[in-house]
Image (tube, rainbow, N blue to C red):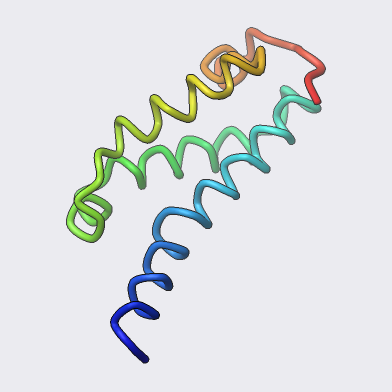
Amino acid sequence: MSNSEIQEFLVETIITKPMQEYSEYVKRLIHNPNDRDAKTRITEIEGFFLSAPFRALTHANGAGIIAAIHAMLDKQGVQINALLDGKENKDVQ
């Protein structure tokens, strides 16, 4: 396996896949604001982005990634913090 292949694998595993999962859990939560599993997984993924292992492996700003995700959702009319707190019941596509 070449260095570039290893790097692609790491990016896929450490950043891309969790972001895809995050998106899927947000969609689940939009359609069912009481989905505890979705809330738990979103919180876990955010925790991963803020973790020391994530920083060590990526040298990325996890808080910045979360802020960017929240800003993107906000532009789509989704208030993720309100959904996680159970204060929003919005039908967004």
